[in-house]
Amino acid sequence: MTDEELDLLVRQASPISDAQVDAFDLGSGERHLLEAIMSNTLETVTPLAPGRHRSRRRTRRLMVVGAMAVAAATVATVVIVGGGDGGSKPAYAADILAVAEANDRVLIDLPGWSVSRADEFTVDQGEMTFSDGAHEVEVHWRQGSEYASWVNDRASGNDDLGTVTVLGRQGRMFRYVGTQDYTALVEPAGASLLEVRGVFASEADYRAMLGALKSVDVDTWLAALPASVVKPSDRTAAVDEILVGVPLPVGFDTAGLFESASVSDRYQLVATVTGTVVCAWFDQYFTAIEQGDDAAAKAASDALISSHQWPALLSIVDEGDFAEAIWEYADATLPGGTLLGEPLTRDELALGLCRA
Image (cartoon, rainbow, N blue to C red; front, side, top):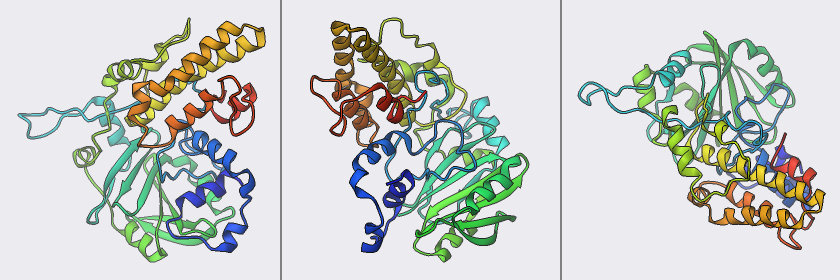
C-alpha cells in the first residue's frame, strides 16, 4: 500500500466499497501506516514540491520528523499578541503583521466555519485549516511564480474539472481520482497563489464553499487565528517548557531549538523539539551498538524509554499520533524489542523517523 492510498483511506468520510478495499495491498499496511504517521503530512516546513502527490490532509494531527537532527530551527510556534489602545484593538508582533500583509487573507463566510489550525506561515508560504465540525478545508499559499508547475502537478493523474472563479480570480479545479477530495488552485494576486482543498459530499458543496471564501483586512484575519498560535518571541519559554523532564545527550546543542523563522502551533513545536532530542539519542544508541559499548547503548535506550513520561509528549497524546509513534520506536530498543516484528536498524530509523 502506498502512502497516497493510506491517506485516501483516512480522508474518506463515507464508507468505501468492497471493490475499493480489494484493490489495496493490506498485507503490508501496518508498516506503511507507521511510516505514514511519521512522514505523511507536513513535509517539514517546505511546501510539497510539484511532481509529488502525497496528501497533506489531516484527519488526525500527524507530524513528520524528517531531518530533525539537522533542521531543528525550521518549525516554530506562534501566537497573537494582546494589547492595543486600551484593549479596544489588538496589537500584533511585527513578524506576524508582515506575514498577514504579504499574503491573501481569507476566511470562509459560512455559519459554523472557523480557523482550527495555522502552520508554517512566512511571507513566502503557509497553510491554515478551517473546520465546521464536519468538514475540513486546507488553504495553502505558495510562491505565485510556481502556479503553472502546481497546475501541471495537480492535473497529472487527477480529474480535471476545468476553470473556476475564486475571490474574483481565475483558477483551476481538480478532484483526486476515486475520491470526493477536491482542490482548486487560484491564480496569484501579487506574490502568492492559493490552493484550497477539502473533502465534500458533492462537487456542488465544494463549489459553494469556494464561493463563500472572502478576503478580509489584517486585523480581522489575525483575530480569527486560534489560541494555539504563538508569537516567535514566546518560543524560548515554550521550548524551555517542552524540555522539562527530557534528558539530553551529552554534547547536545539546544541552540537551534530556540530559533524561529516560521509559524506553527504548539503540537508541531512539541514534535519538532522532542523529535530532535529523540533522534540525537538514537544516533548515540546505534553508535554505541556499532562500537560494542553495551553500557552506552543501554543508557541511550533508557533515555528513549523515558519518553513515555515526558510531559510534553503526554500533553499532545490526544491530539495526534506523534507521541505514540515515538514510543513504538523507543520500545524497539528494549532487549528483544522490535518495530512491527522486525529488529530496529539505523536504516529503518532513517526511513521512518530521523530522516537526514
